[in-house]
Length: 328
Image (cartoon, helix red, strand yellow):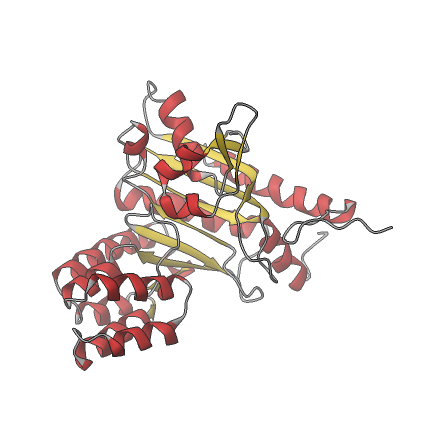
């Protein structure tokens, strides 16, 4: 008799579990080498805690009432629980706090290929480190982590959360156009973005052309030069911040590993500056992401800048399998 399990979840058999443990151990070793200390948080949080951190993240949470009638939620990522932990438990210690984790997270999604309700994450949070130098440290650890699991061909995409909102504001886009186009851009639906921009009555054709040109810009330092010729003050300020981060990465000798992406927009609402996405040529979806979240910690009573990244363990394993690296 076959006993089904919920869509978007899965059993893990011994051989795969062994390989996943190897990935986790390799990543934790890199994190430790860079003085990041492992922490754990409850799988369950109060639902209000997730809502305090980020409304969009909370909307994807599984909620239920406990025996006392308290509304609980399964964590949707590790950044918000670690922000709470740092504010509540480490607030009296001298920052920066270098923390890392390996844990499962849970999101309400429509299950289909590559989308899971339960998934493994491993990552770091640098709390109390501000500006381009701190972001460069996070990206350098990410680069070394990818090398440690054999994914030397993976690309680290780098954007800035202020680019797209700044560009839309500079050209006078309405709030409705901003909301609808941002929603499509988060899901990488560029056709949908173009349709919305072309149909927006407040935008001239030249504005729509410039917006579409910008979100298609990816590459090295030349992207900064090309982008600087478009947009206005708000977009220009975000572009300069992205350029400062890229320069810091070049100083650390890892600029070659980074692809600047002026069309990057992350789905979580707490990112406030540099954003990160990780791509591998053998996997159709991003295998990791992160960025700066300088405004998040203050929501929990600890006003510190912060940045971090997470890697999706099952997707890293998938990339290893496709490159013949699993079991090594």
